Structures are given as C-alpha cells and as structure tokens.
Image (cartoon, rainbow, N blue to C red; front, side, top):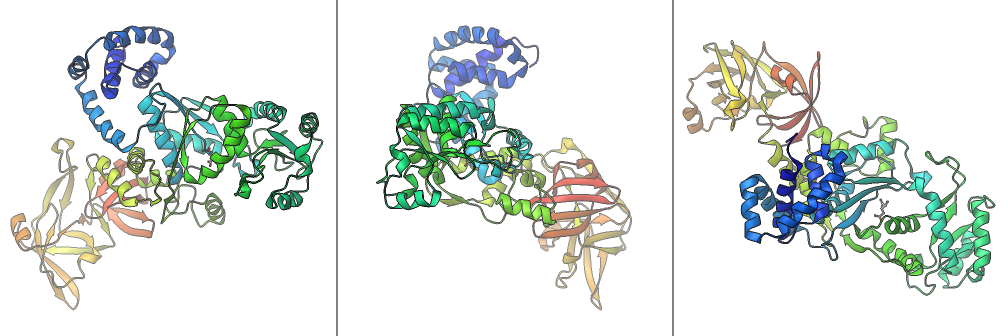
Amino acid sequence: MAGEDPRDLLLRCALANAVKHGGVPQAGAVIGMVMGANPDLRSRAKEVSALAREVIAEVAALEPEQRRKKLSELAPEMIAALSEKHEHRKVLPELEDAKDGVVMRFAPNPSGPLHIGHARAAVLNDAYVKTYGGRYILRIEDTDPKRVDPEAYETVVEDIKWLGLGITETVYQSDRLDLYYDLCRQLIGRGGAYVCTCDNERFKELKMAKQACPCREQPVEQNLALWEKMLAHGFMEGEVTVRVKTDLMHPDPAMRDFPAFRVLDSPPHPRKPDAFVYPLMNFSVVADDHLLGVTHVIRGKDHIANTRRQRYIYDHMGWKVPVYRHYGRMGIEGVVLSTSQMRLGIKEGTYTGWDDIRLGTLRALARRGILPEAVRNAMLAIGIGETDISFSWDNLYSENKKIIDPIANRYFFVPDPVTITIRAAPQLTTHALLHPADEKRGVRTLAFTGAIVLPAAELGDRTRSLIRLKDLFNVTAEYDHGRPHLSYAGDSLAEARAAKAPIVQWLPVADQVPCTLRTPEGDIIGACEPAVRNELGKVVQFERVGFARIDSVTDDGVVAYFTHK
Ligand code: GLU
C-alpha cells in the first residue's frame, strides 16, 4: 500500500467506520485506523486530518446502503473483518458516554513482567479504545519504590508490544511527583485532606473507634505549613501521613480517612533517587485519571474498595468521575503468578527465568508458542462480566489452535525412540506433505532404507498385529521373547484402516536429529526430522503428539516447547 494516495485509504477507513457504527464516521477512529494501516503517514498528520474532514463529509452524505456497497467494491476484506469484529462486539457490552470516543489506560506496576491475569485489563481496555476510537495510555505506576523492579520498566513495555496493544502514549508516575504535590496542596486547601503526625498505632485505634485524631481539626494553614515541611524533608519515614477526609462513621474502617502521601527514606527510587515523599495509589490514580482525561476505567472487582475511596477525592476536588466497570475475579490454575514467588524461584534456580514455562507470564506463553492474538481472543471471550470465573486454558488453547493449525508445518517427532529393522521391505523414499491442507507448501522427504526408530510406547502392545507407518507402508508385528519383529505388509492404507491399525510416526535411523520436547510436566527425549531445524522460533505440529515451538537448534539437536494438543 506504500505510495498509495492517502485519500483512498482514508475513504476505505471512513466507510468501514461508518458501516461498523451504522452512523457517520468518527474522525478520531478513522485517523487512528489510517495511521495504523500506514505508519508513514504519521509524519503527515496535518495533511491527513485535513483530508479526513473532506472524506468524512463525503461519506456522511451517503445513505447507509451506499456506504456498504461502496466499501464492498473498494475493500471486500474490510466488510468481512467487520462481521468478525461484530462477534466480539456482541460479547463486549456497550459503554455509556463512549460514542464520541474514549480515553482509557492500562496501569501496571513495574514489579515484574506481565502475566495472564494482567492481559485481561490490558486487552479489554484496548478493545474498547479500538471500538470507540480515542487514546490508550500506558501508565507505569511506580510510586512505591519497594515494589519497583528496575528491569520491569523494559519487560512491561516489551510484553505490551507483544500483546499488540494500541498504546498512544506512555507516562511514568515517577515523572509526575510535582504534579501530585500541587494537587495535594489544592486538596488540603479545600479542606479535603490533612497532615497527620499521630503515631500510626494511635491513629488506628481512633479510627476503629470512629473517632477523629487531633490533626483532623487543624486549620488549613497549619496543614499547608506541615505539608511544606514534609516536602522539605522535615519528617522522617513513619512520622507523617497525609490523609484524605472521608467519613469516620463509614462501616468499612478501610474507608475512614485513608492515606494519600507518605515519606519513605528507603529504598531509593530507581528513577528518582532524590524523592522521599510519595503518593499512595489511591491518590496518584485519581490525579492521573483526572489530569490525563481518562473517561472510562475497566478494572477488576478487587478495585471496588479503591473506587469508593477515590470518589472522596473526586468530590473534594469537584472533578468529574470516570465511568467504571469492575469485572469479576479470574482464578488461574496450574501456573505460578505471584511475582515474589517467581523472583525467588528464579534466584534459587528452580525456574530458568521469567519465561520458564511453569510460570504464567506472557513471555512463558510466548515461549510455548501461544500467540498474542490467541490471548487477545480468549480475553475478549471472557469479557467484562462481574461473575467470578476460572480461567480456561482449554479455551486459550483452542483459540491458539485456530490460528496456528493452518500455519504450522507438520513433522515427525518420535518420543523415546526404539531402533528396529523392518524385514522384507522395499527401500523407498516418501514425500509427506508439510501441511495436509496446502499442497503448494511442499513436502518433507524421508528415505526408508531398512532401519527406523519408532516410539517405544507403540511397541509395547502385543495385541497389535498390524501397524501403519505413516506415509510409508504397513507392517505386521510379531513378538519373540518380548522383542518385537516388524515385517513389511503391503502399502494399502485402506487395509490398515479396515484393520483399525494404529498409524505411527517414524524416522529413518540414518536421518534423525535428537530432539527434546519440554512440557510443564517434564522433558520428553526423542528425535525429529532434520528439516525441523529450519523452523527455529516457529510453531510446528509434531504429528500425533501436538503443537510445539522450536526454541533452539544447535549441533546437539533441537529443543522444542510443547504448546498444546
Ligand atoms: N496499578 C494498579 C494495579 O496494577 C492499577 C490501578 C487501577 O487500575 O486503577 O493494581
């Protein structure tokens, strides 16, 4: 599409947007789509938005049927994609106040790489921005130096790139401390917060007894003076807390005058080593949701209590509250998700790294050959429902399979190989298809010269008299003192099927490569076709075994990671 007149691309995108929403095209979404399709146009943003106005007016003047007709002439694939998207739109409920576009955010703490639990907020917020058009802010929430892992600044951004989120801007909260200090001054000025110098234990007792601490009644001027003293490092860690005035009678003690700022003398912040006054999450989240113009927040139910706390700050400041949706809890079994547990395990050598396949990180999924589109589709299917659910790995695998099955080349992998010579067999070279549904992709060549390897598990069953060697011929099995002897038994696939013979993968002894298949349950040692060495980094299907991602290829052989059946 390079070199194409931007007007043509704009026209297609404006038509697609109008057809999708059944209304006039939305400028923000159209321009976003155009820039996404042709990033070179980003440097010509002015010209593109001027052109967009013209094109949008042109499309707006058409009848809905004319728009659809024109789009199917110009870009039939876009009509097809719209009906696919439509499925997702059915799953995701509409958001109120969103039709003019939205501003949303994904706000991870940089404490470690993202895991499958993070993917839900990341993908759903993204999907809504893509539906309605607008901005998608990545906000790195790093105002608790105790929970910052300096490496995570990079890993989180890499993980987000992998997920393919349409992030439009990135902010680091540690760059914004002065903004928070200003807002705190304003909040104190409005009588919405006070600087509390009570002993923490004493404050807790009073709070539990629904009583005000003496600091709560201080005049604003005194609070402002204490705040400046706090900023001038006139207090040490633990000596002072800025508290938001809430409702001391609130039935939930955690709502009563919750903390907004504190002093921390250590550890030093990796990006701001001189900082010592830090906002707590409920303050910095509100400050930024307001300052960045966030319109809609989709987050887990575990934030409902925070939402309640945060409303007090909105009320004190007279700010507009965003639209919130809180989705239900999602239990995830079978993998490790706790960052501290993962970090410890890596340090102690239990796990090989953040992408160890026993972990639930996105990088572990990627290493196993799960594609970001599959994670995305699985999360869209889960949606923003309030019911608590448990995450279904099977659904993720079936989403992944839909994508990789048509792509993955097929090969033989023989687990636990046993060498055996076939008696009375003709020597022949077989050409098995790389993909059964796509002959054009070509073949793998396997030369049979007498001796092969077979999976040990296939030879233990003495009731089997006929075995089909896949893509080769049939053999009969006879056992002599427990040792199998295989003899050539004709080429007919129909005969093998009629006899319900197992169809078994095999490899020529002279033409095999050692291959280790890593699964979360442990390694399977085996051998694979030499051509697998050309698939480094790709997902293949080991016939009868399952999909696997080829992780490394060396002189010692191939290491593959099991993806799923
Ligand atoms: N950084 C917060 C978290 O990861 C998110 C805050 C929010 O979504 O409001 O839990």
